[in-house]
Image (tube, rainbow, N blue to C red):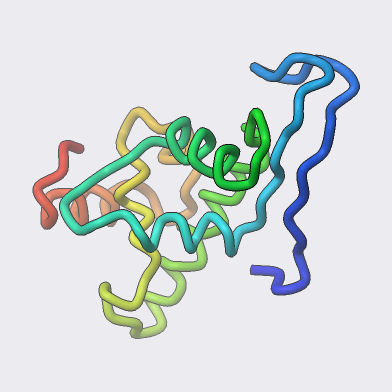
Length: 128
């Protein structure tokens, strides 16, 4: 993850995804997403859509960028899995599996597949 990445709130000049022109949009960083995920309690899950709402509200914006939020979720997942492969304990990882299930578009894009996510979700009693 890029430690120099900066978050921002901007007014968008034309409609974008589910965001109307003139709205304020929060653009986070992978670290912001990792921090958000790290606060999801064991055995609980949330969605990318809920994270977007929460981050927008926290940063006094009307919306959170849907594109970067999804990209950053994948970056966090890939980085956490790399840490796991390198020997990190599960408790040391950003628990990205609490935001990714089989229906999450990011699940199909993970370089390491879905088995690890399914295993972690089962371990926490979460639906796959």
